[in-house]
Length: 238
Image (cartoon, rainbow, N blue to C red; front, side, top):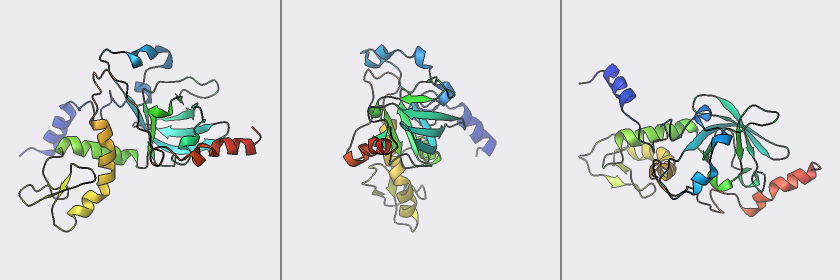
């Protein structure tokens, strides 16, 4: 039987899968991102294998002046400005950027603002997604997914010998009929379902650039929300 120290050392030396949200190379903190001037836009459209990356951060606060701006905290606790320079100045994300939610930015780079510390300048809304879950919950769900896998075992009690039912929502987790096992998975199910978009990608050498899917009724706001920010700006005299 391994001791807690042995388990800790093993987890520290075992390489993380590239698609694990806890991997610092695929999902870097802000200071792990490439500077804007070092990013080669041609690489994003290259037909050669290349690495992909995505920034994940917790939304601390939001404000609207000329555009939607967020204060975001990365996985190491560093806080930074995230400013929307998309065509609608962030209107599509206005209703989604709530305190405690998680923002994901594909191919993020460090941007130097004129009057603020370095942060993120967002120009393509197809590279941005806001999840209605905490960053800690998403990282924990990813950790469990890669440590335990989504094999045929109960998510609540880890048993494999008892009859199991497969979850039709996330299409991968299993649960038994014991009291508490289904509620335990039901709480994690939405997060597990969402992070599968990340875990099923080839972050190491896919030749295709990644984009977040766009759904008018889901990941992106309805048209009235898209028009909300310009209306607010007009009311403020801009």
